[in-house]
Image (cartoon, rainbow, N blue to C red; front, side, top):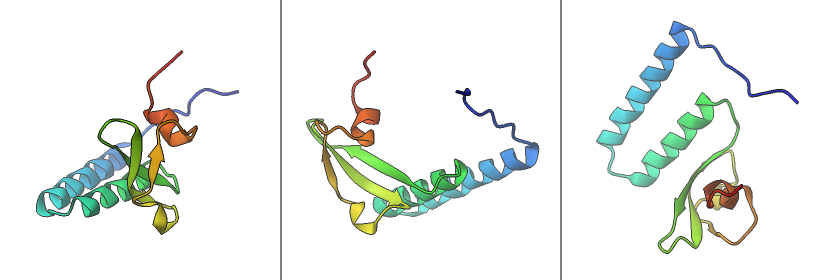
Length: 100
């Protein structure tokens, strides 16, 4: 088993990431549509970490459910889906309380 990949970024890559972040900040400031902002954030993160899929999850009031607020690379009907925190899924594992 190998350790985590180290990625060395050159100045051009760093500049590109900073520009993407700045452009997103401007988009977020201009928009009053939170769903559009979260969808754009999801798309940009997916591109930045070079993955086909990403999601934005929101912990619902009471902490017993997660709601998918935005998604890239998943079926369109996943947005709005609510997951029970008692379910054993990658989403609930990553959001749930840490344990040894």
